[in-house]
Length: 122
Image (tube, rainbow, N blue to C red; front, side, top):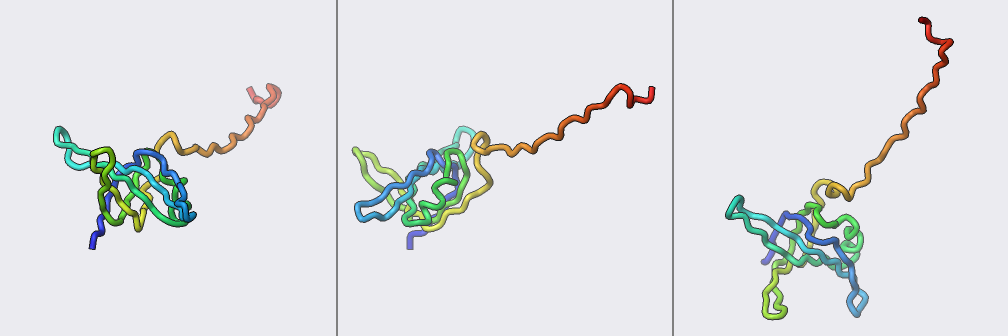
């Protein structure tokens, strides 16, 4: 059984495309860091989530957001290079949207009350 879990940051916003048969596939890149200092390394995964679940979570998978992904780890060859892939079975959104992507809700401020000079006791 090939089942791996990774926690990392999204490298690019998720995008949904459709196969010739009409099946939705949502894809994004995930950066997983390990080590620290001079020994810090980043592992990049090409993630794909098939079906309607992918369509529904795509809007929340934005560049810089942190998430956990569990699925089947694999590889693919392209132009002589090997890339890691993760066919996602389960995705967990961790925290909120990254700073800058989240709109701040502003409460309306009450209008200042106007005081007349006549009302001041001194």
